[in-house]
Image 1 (cartoon, helix red, strand yellow):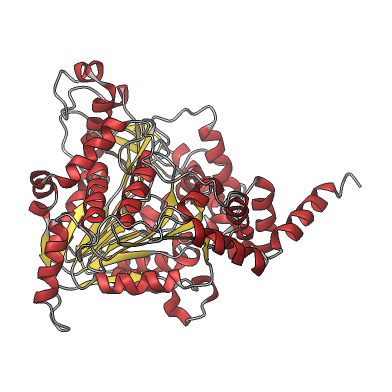
Image 2 (cartoon, rainbow, N blue to C red):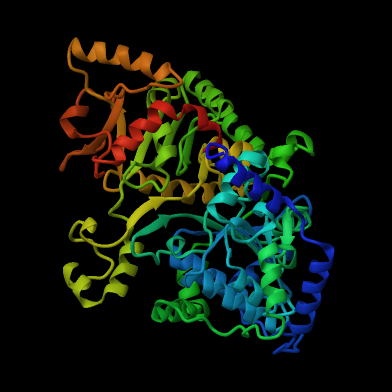
Length: 606
């Protein structure tokens, strides 16, 4: 009996978790919400008392100039985290009719609560607000959801693909979901979309959590969004409606734990009030920036570009079941077509470099052309990544990347010298002592930033082909994005926009920001033997335990100019800094080696 106890526990969870919520309980919760929801509307003006926004002004101008054959759009890159948050707040306050948000993560920290509060304020002045968030990492607090369900009659929230129809799950429930229904629960909605009045949309890599807006003291993401104003937003609206109406988008009253919370507190739910923030000063700062015409002009409008065609591509919610045929993986399909059409150069930025077979075949074909297509890859190092297992699988295939695909790989340092916006926020949070350490010059970097501030991890997902077309979206170049998660992004057919995205990625690959990955300098005779053994070890699905990989990390020496690894003087200007620079090798390297040896079988789902 003792041997069967774990399986009996799993079976119990399965039986209880799979039982559907009764229609009677759903109707009762719907009635409670209808009776207790806040129905006040603070504004009765036609424009819902909206504040001005230069982005919506751009959208109106672009739509007026567009026709079916000649679309006009405005495109703005959002590279700095706090700027991206200010742009969202500006648009929320400027919305007149609707706000639709689709996201993978929504946290209960300052950034997440601030956006929620702004959305509720918009709903209370008459704007229709819809939030669709993946359940795995979003708003999984039944008490909070019970309050949000009644915060405003103009606010509606749904969670996507909830495990056992619950907002919050314990370890046993997640384990049971893997054992019983892995294919279903493995598919996540990874799309990021922020849409206002069906006229301005933001898509890219950012979720709603402090670390995406340079507000986390431990780890901040180097990320990128594209703000599109114009008729391209209409396709964004169609995409959102497809997901909103899909069967896996579950209303709050249909979630077992949120339903129980609503029924258990039919009348005494506390009204929504302005949250208590961990750092109210920075919240006030970004709110002020969102309404400052000079700030908006300098940080956004000055860099906006008038472009023509912009396509918003997205996987259909039925992606893993392929109910719509191959087009269910629309974004993946179009990215592969973009790559295959490259003639001279591909510049790729991805947090995780674990390619599908299809992508590998395309890159191998590009490398075999005469002359080969140059492929510059910006990705994470072990020191900067937030996903150690995925990095381990990327590490296993370094030789294939360098030799078969001809990749020029640069791995981000955990404290890149050009990430000044993150350092700036750290200084503002830390006060005079940190500023004094910087020589009293905020925004300058006279000393090594690893002496203070958060670790930086790459999270941007972008692609530039032949300096003429660029993609910014949620799609990582890994099997999970290609085959499981739904993804979305914009493809902008404009050389100016492509140049801006390319310049941003190239900056992240500069020696002060990234290590160069190149073949290890061989030791005569011994090196040849090591390479031979390593080749055999890498070809095995398991037991890849040879510690001397084909490639390693290099740092540019002071006073030298960057050189390709094929240059005869390469080793005169570069120092080998080991396979895992700036990493505590006691535990992390052991885990990485272990996954490199035994993790090949799970590559397709990481």
